[in-house]
Length: 171
Image (cartoon, rainbow, N blue to C red):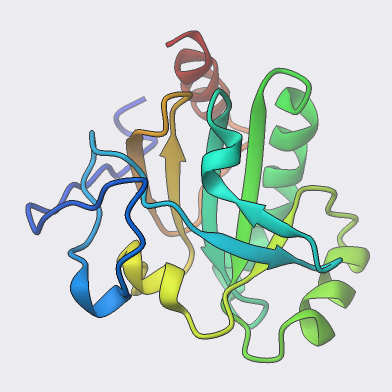
């Protein structure tokens, strides 16, 4: 499993899940610390709040339609979502596309993606998480703690990915 994930934790600070400081007042997230809470709208205009998902394992992915590696990993993410969605697992795919739903909705439909796609219009959430390159993924446990950080695209259908999700679901 260690070869599957490139896990990184920056020693640059932490952010509590409940605080709502502006990005400029935050340090980047650290492994083993609470995931910063946020609210973003999905493609249907519904407000999604990370803290509302407490009790579920969350795969938080920052991506864009113009990002080749992001596009490549999306079908595997969809398969992972279908495999675990009824078992207290959620994917939040946060788009950084400036055009918002105008460009992400056709991508979602074309690829038959059923997990929530959120839009981060001013990239405040992405910056809070330190997502400076795409794709970047965070795995958050049931208690809202960041357990893994993945740089770049991954094969989310690989046995190692499934084992990791199962391990987090048992914790």
